[in-house]
Length: 234
Image (cartoon, rainbow, N blue to C red):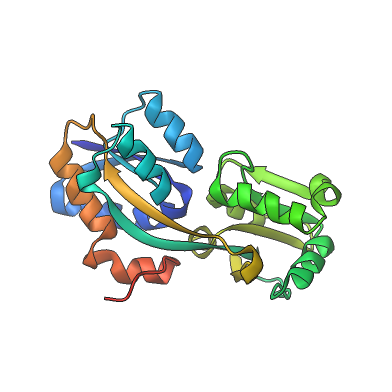
């Protein structure tokens, strides 16, 4: 028995931690694909096998209205901020203000972040660089990847001395070899709620709902919080 998952990169680490629990509780294996939310939506609409979709809450709303997801099964995993990262052994730059962030980015010799066309954090970060007036200057130093997890993995292996990166805080926390500097300054804050829902075409809805309960329920609450998901007090 296999459960098919299309999932935003922001939840990749959490899914990896819970995969063994799913197998133990249900005997099911997980066939998961991770990537930018735009790519996950495209895959769903193209007919790729999918029982559970994990993307932004806004995209879940859109796909429920379109009849692609079951609104009665949706559940929020939590809110994720967008942050700045460096290699684990590098000094942490000051990013506490727009001016400090601008200086930190200009001082970097390579900048790692996810797809600026389809990834939530990548789109936002590209706009931040434009607002800071340094997008064109930094373009030759930009290293973009399909998702934030891949970008952070590449940052961890960067050979340059002053590499820096930007993506969702969860992807930073779950990547060995990188360190979270902090969230973007308040003026550039991006906090995104991620949600899961069963697809309308799923042939194993009961199993899909059990997996969503595992992802978004009390059993994973501490894991989500430790991994960078901000949860509403209960």
